[in-house]
Image 1 (cartoon, rainbow, N blue to C red):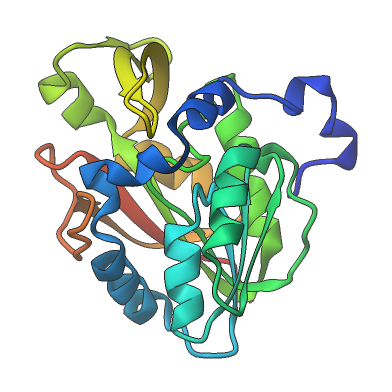
Image 2: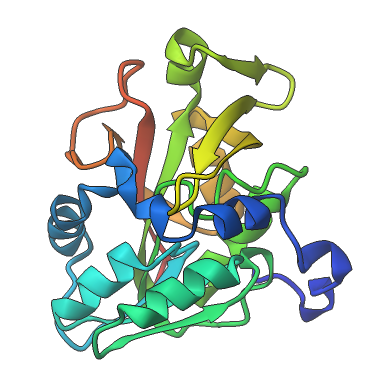
Length: 247
């Protein structure tokens, strides 16, 4: 299921999000959607059955907010991200049990090593807008799980994008939302950047997971800082998927 090591080609060494992350730096953590980390981790601990001593892989970890919070709860976490800027920030605030490295989520090297994998807030899945790249990320995460291991994955809600995402263009042929927005660095310097986000329906997530050999346990509608078990709806921006690798 995992990506072939030969896929570590020049195509996979860079990504459109890297310059955005480089500009944002620590200012990323000023955004409101990053303020619900504790609630999100509280919910994940229960849903994934995480206990001290377990190993978790955080794919698209950003500046490490979920990984570091999990590590403070006694969970051993390894975070990966395409942005070296974000990895440096994560390392700078890392407690014991949290480690980080720059790695492309399309080329995950692990096989049956983690009790759980998390990929949240469009950290990797959903940003890989080339054809089949999200599937490649998902297969790599599935392969990294031990048999019986659990996945927690967030994906942007395609229904919400069509109904509410003003100021963005949704391409119905690809399911990708494109937005031109302004971002500021820590000193307030502003630049305009293009953001592309892959959007999904629950049916599509079911099909992708089946192709990756994962069994879906539940899909919920959530928003940052309010992770719940609410059923899928049109009214919230993200789906939160829990799946398992068969034993």
